[in-house]
Image: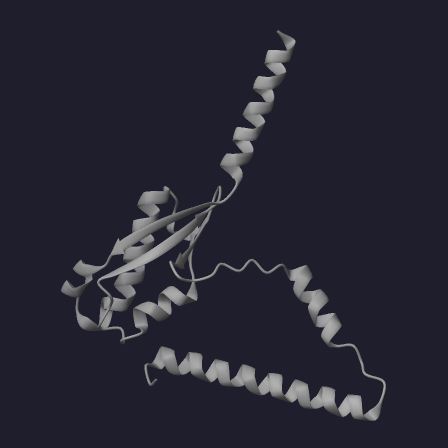
Length: 161
């Protein structure tokens, strides 16, 4: 008897752990009815519609639902007036929150500690003069790439690209 109770307790704990683990759910969100809205308001309404869709399906509040930036870019890709008819999205649902991503988007869970370690490794000071100069040149190249990426992102948002 005692063994059966112990087994049942283990099974219950395992079931609880499975429920707590984040679930990845795939949906196709219809946005066709948004084309009835005035053109300048379509993009904003599309984002609201996506949040309402996941609010209904995941039984969460809108404040607990976080959309990725790629979804916003996909909606604004052809300007705010030409919203896509539907979007394939995936939701990573945890206990009290959900993160929504595009279907083809990779989910990256970068930990702050790992980033800090990488930064420390990169910032090791070289010993020789030549190595210092090379390190400065590399840093300048990295900064330039970051600026280019930022300018591309802003151009996409403006719709000039």
